[in-house]
Image (cartoon, rainbow, N blue to C red):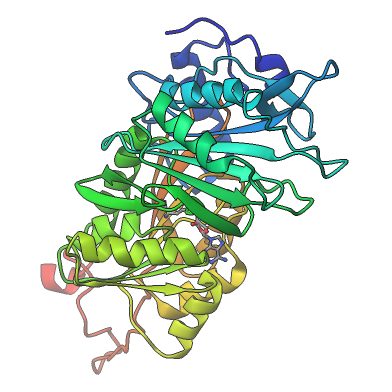
Length: 410
Ligand code: SAH
């Protein structure tokens, strides 16, 4: 395992730098137990065999230091101060190499980093994403203005240096915002998206679509989620907060039908194409707010046997969870990237008809204090109202149990 990172104190991305990996797992286990232990037994966290260079998506901010030299790296936590990162221990090495090449090319092409205060300059961010199984690479150049002088030549030179790049997209972000991507984009080279493989399915990924950043552990996570659902081929399934349809498509092979719901337009478009390309016909995707969608399903008296839900870090909403209660699936599989909001949502849902059966932490983000969790919830059994009948002497006619039914013993 590589030695300690030099930028970690300023970068703030890796809270567990310098902590041996088994100890990191122990700390995460304890944290999960502290937050979730009151809902049931927390299974042993599933860690990685080689926990380095796992991030398949690398984003670098561009700017200048006090001496006017071009720098690139990550924003120091909570600020817009760029911490120069020469080599990161958790990001994919090929993605980092491409970013270093881009930085080295800027001067020759007279490309200035964008200055947020003056609104002058060009390059704001570079995002590089690699399909680990397919080897396909996407480079997104985020510009602060829509004019890209000598853009074609720049992209040509980049491809010459890195023929392994599959596509280059130019994204325009003219707003004063901390969001990396703007809404407008133009394909400069290739198809404008990459594909990758997970759990035997191929997925198309657009620049703005969410895609899990640690593919090896994503397979562990998805397999656990599908195992928890215990599908037999007869179930109607909902995949809420479905992104590009990954969990739903893995589940579709074991279910009667799946409905996916997602807010992001590009992700839903990717999800529909992904289903077609994988020849999965028992799945449908809808764009919209997951809470609204679930409330409409519940009001329309639709049925679902299993609900997978994988909300962002902020967690789900009371509207969504109330609609789950009305819809009444037998199982809910909650995939969470934030145990604090997970605990809040479990608190609500366990008071509203469900009980926690399993809690499985999965380490998707080694060296950071983040942890992913899969939770299986099942609908609490409603005790049917028992109508009692009595014999002439006033005894309950129904024998109670072998041990207590004294009349039988006589
Ligand atoms: N299950 C997917 C995506 C999980 S990330 C996967 O494993 O890849 C969470 C997703 O929820 C993102 O794609 C995000 O765009 C989406 N999202 C965020 N808020 C939402 C909302 N209110 N309704 C529906 N989807 C939402």
